[in-house]
Image (cartoon, rainbow over all chains, first blue to last red; front, side):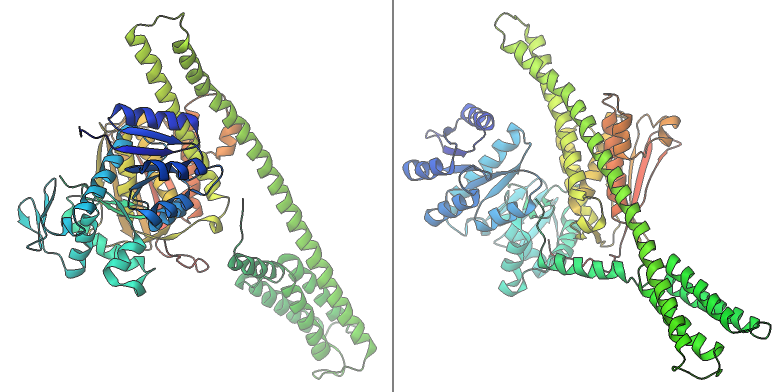
Length: 236
Length: 374
């Protein structure tokens, strides 16, 4: 474990969930501070500069979305949103405003820790240089993407991707482990004006899946978050 | 809370208009057929009849029939107008020309018009009464469902609270195994609760008709991918096979709900069928996408197979605190989700053992739902 513990701010009004999150994170070597209301959270954000923020959107005194805005207006600390299943729109809004990831209730400790680790790693990579993952090599399982040579290999065999397919894959890889919303991907690949047309993106994703996944119905590398977007598996 | 968008309000006004004056080909056929018969009878009786009043009476009967057996006011009024014109033209002297001065004719026309309006009003009333009755019945079943669910939730909650209290009590000295079992119980009861709640949430999400669905074009492979992912998280030891068509396929659906269907079916296979392998298959059949979930489990006893598809509200009524009831609820929900999508669902035991559940979804959307972006 790192010598300096990562500081995590848990913003959650339910005492029992907050305790649970706190205990699991502390037991895994994180430094945890807790806020139970939005106002408290804002004070703590200024006072402690946490390395990561775990945020429940449903707070009693404030819309969780405002906290995301506040955090993003002053820095890049990763935000992981805790959300209830029924609100895809909230998830999309939170991600588009700059949240890094979300985790849906009910979730287990393992899943929580995986998301927290991924978000922290991302934040660090971002600091190391914005183009960090676009050079070098990405590896996950049998998949290998060499960005310097524009080469995608599966089990050592070259995979031929079209221009847009390669652009999508490299975009997802740059943010590996993180959900990218449909709109975000479309904007990055086809430009500002192309928003809204998910059909084209889906068709491209289907082709990519057929080229990269052994079984497109049981993906290993590119996961769908139905109604929200796509997530690439964490690199090794 | 329900919010109506502007589009939904316009839709509501249009629906009201449609309700009062609906246009459909069945009703048009009724109108044409009845009026033709009335005309023929009038013409047939003309040489025999003593005076022309028989024709007017035949047409009154015709208008009455049309107004009674068509929806709304439109066809009744159309029938009375047709009748008035035909009677005037063909059955009142001077024959085969229009005569509008005759006071008797105005009376005939007024009578025909009145008959159509009164009958249409009565018909509409009868239909409204019927709807109110059905609505009341639904309300009653809903209340029963809530009560039954409330009862069902008590059992696992009792177990959770009891286990926790037992472990908190300093008087109790449990062996590590006992403690482990108590905690394991808390977890499994909690998981049962969350499944129940997910199903209930889907019921509320679905509402009671197709217009509540949040449909968009979805790729079955993506929905299956996510459902299988979630399933494997809970049941990592179960072998899941997915068979997809090579060709790109898109189906209009509420992805969240269809995912729930697939998840429920896989989970049933494991929990109730004790299966070790589950096979999901999607294929395209003419205008339909066919989803199949097969397992290698114990199959469903023949006598249960027939009772499988109860209304979840009826199931709740049958009740009885049986945990297996959750299967009934889950399945009835699956069937309802498929039905509001315009598809069908069936179950059968496989000859080689195990069960197959399959359902179809139409590939074409009904006209009124524009594909809205995800």
